[in-house]
Image (cartoon, rainbow, N blue to C red; front, side, top):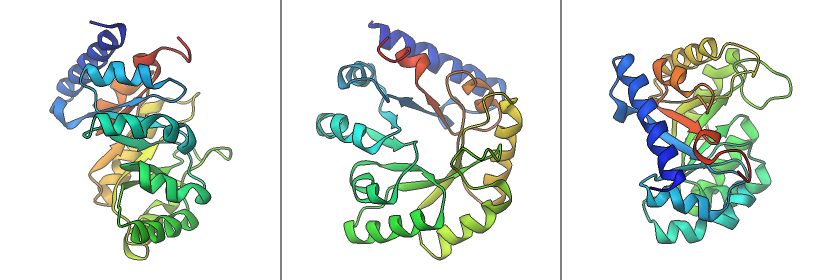
Length: 222
């Protein structure tokens, strides 16, 4: 087994343990392998080990890496997990299967327009700024219900869940619990939360998707 396959097996084992400890089915948790800054060869290593769901932060980087991989592995699913500028919406809708960072009316409107034009409808998550950090993207907790309603009723987006990135210096469990509660309140089945340092906590608190990069790929260039 390759180094990547070993790391993948270990992360999957820990996800399964955390799920079982919470009385959840491990199959209800999807591992999103965050491949940003890592080349196609590293992605292919995990593809060969059976991983099929990947996450990228930037449209441009994903465009350079994934079209050839998607042609080779038709069941590959690609998530956009970084901020999306409206001028990149056309490329994002064409390439990504899931867009996790819907966070403002202007973007929701642009996505709706492009989905209609391209006849392609990637699943969408609303990104929530659970820590209300001024420098971070995301809808504020107090505005989530209204924004979800707008995405559904006005823009008719294929909305499936919520996503968050908790503040680095705060206890992530509080943010994960809040996100799960907001998703349930809005009838959204999917919750994307938890990264390399805290994905087991996220699984215990209801994550349906965890976004793991460093624990799978090592540090950039590593």
